[in-house]
Image (cartoon, rainbow, N blue to C red):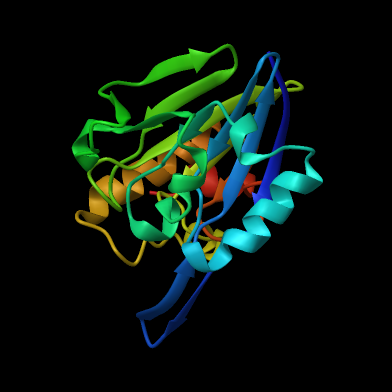
Amino acid sequence: MVTSVRVIFEGWLSRQDDVLLEAHSTSTLVVTEGHNVLVDTSTKQQRSPLLQGLKAAGLRPEDIDILINTHLHPDHTGNNDLFTPASKMARSEEHPDASFMCITEDAEILPGIRLMHTPGHSRGSMSVVVETDGRRCVIAGDAIPTRDNLEKWRPPMIHYDRSVALDSMRRIVELADVIIPGHGKAFEPDPRSRTKR
């Protein structure tokens, strides 16, 4: 059973004229009875704030026993090396190395924590769906990089297929009471966004 979902480090990105200048992913902690699950580890430049966030949660890197990467772009994996004892998970389409458990289908990995394939940004993008306190939180990675993407109904700026990316956004919105985007603050989706086409 999930006891808490907590953003450990709130990521961000900056763009100018549709050119991505800088990106640092959000890192989210999911605590269950018996497990500490970390989703994404941001960039090496954000190592210190990531560690501070863990410390504020009363944890050290060695206390993380499951590490999930929503995809394997470096702005989401930069501090994976801090969590070598953890079981690491990524989708097979991301071609992870042998240190990862390859995820090939949607699956509940622990009670209340489910992995959902949400491609578009990359072929192996996945989101983490967490049921807690009667609410469903979706840690979306770059399937929904920012709240702005959802409000303007715009796919991730970097994507391999616009229609696939928008379909993943739709599926997330249909499920989520709360969305934690890949880069930015957690938010509750506007019910009107559920009807986007």
